Image (tube, rainbow over all chains, first blue to last red):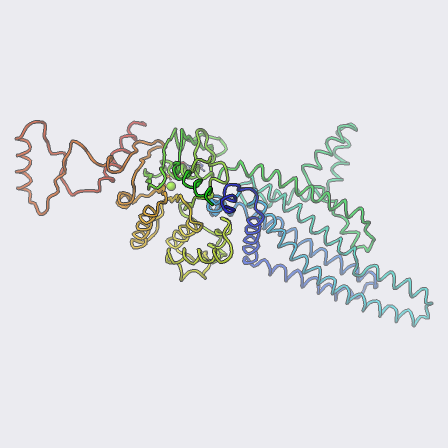
Length: 300
Length: 299
Ligand SMILES: Nc1ncnc2c1ncn2[C@@H]1O[C@H](COP(=O)(O)OP(=O)(O)OP(=O)(O)O)[C@@H](O)[C@H]1O
Ligand SMILES: [Mg+2]
């Protein structure tokens, strides 16, 4: 009776989405993507032992700067290239015929691909995050010990010592760092959803990669474009509408600039992190909805 | 339980596939030039029968199947599976489809591929493993179960496609050229498999260019040419030519043939020898004749 109902009901199935996502992860992992992850992780570790000529604080900042660069590189390259590859390949190989001739709603197929890429990026980021925390912690305690020993020789007061210690600790492992990683993840999510949407109407992998890449660059410089271009061309009301439209079409990737704050060791406000998360999820949802609308109509 | 049983029997009475007034137009290229692949096609596949769709290359057989499976949207008309519109996802819950030249995720092994498709059909646990093993045995792919699909030969892919189509025990099987690229022994096995489906009451919609085999397995056939159905009906009725009699002789020499011709000519009454030569498969003859006629008609 139950199976009968299930057959008739159809509907959304989380387990089917999971099956698709797991297959996507397997596919990408077996394409030797992990080699890429290992190389970037090596950069994080190496960064821990570079820059000895800088001051204590600078050393830690550089370590974070290089590491977050590696994290972003890993997640954005996967978000653009891996995503751009998935859909056109399934269409080209006609794998889509066998999948969609099963009782699989097209939305589940798309979500499966999306979550598959996100799972891989999330897993990779988590690994690199753990590694970064470990290296940073190690480096921080090392630098701190050196610095304090140096200051003590210079007969610094206990107060001066405490200030220096606090300055160095602010650059160390903390919640802000995790918010930074979250920002990298969300940014990758927005770009993944965007690439998926573009691949729903693009006819080739190359087109998707190039277009997504361009949109990302524009998204990074959105504020500039708004200020210089719209401000000169439109009046106040027109400028508002144009900027609004622009922010919908192109993701405002400056949302995720907290990464720079984290690298600089500045405290990130809880509210700002929440806003970033909300806006990021909204962008993802929006792109996925459009992707679905495009994909449902697609002739295979 | 009772309700479920009566429900199923009610479904069984329905036609497995109905296509009514199907037209499919492709717009391709930048110029958006329209190409009519299928034109006003109607056909019905009754539950439990084996229906063969035949026709020359590019006549619209695969296109028709893709519309039936909801992979392409009809430009006009509609298609139904067991009474449900092909555009509904649920219409696909009891169909197994083998597309032409099937291909799969090349990074998965044969077994993983079957498990993947089984899960998409809602199978899980021990049942899924059991079905996957059965399907591998059925299609002689047991040795290849652990090998990546990327290294499969064409015939192996075809057999994996068949296994994938059957994994959830569908009531309707749609096969687009199941024997393409399969060796003679394998192709014979697929024929036997289709015959066994018929015995078990499954419905089969199949296309193939091997007309000899089609003649052996099909209850009814439809012949398509240029996107139009040119002949449809029970195979026996179609290939019987009422006013002709076939005389198949062995070891005759020219002299004897000549005497037979004279005899026929002498008998008058409009009797005549239509043709002499080695006998051909009758479906093949029919195929050539009907698709030829329509070709002339088009021009
Ligand atoms: N996606 C498409 N875009 C444009 N034209 C198409 C498309 N798919 C099929 N066609 C055209 O529709 C016609 C019918 O194709 P179809 O694949 O249905 O033929 P078929 O009967 O299966 O032939 P074959 O025996 O070679 O498999 C062909 O002329 C083909 O070029
Ligand atoms: Mg075909």
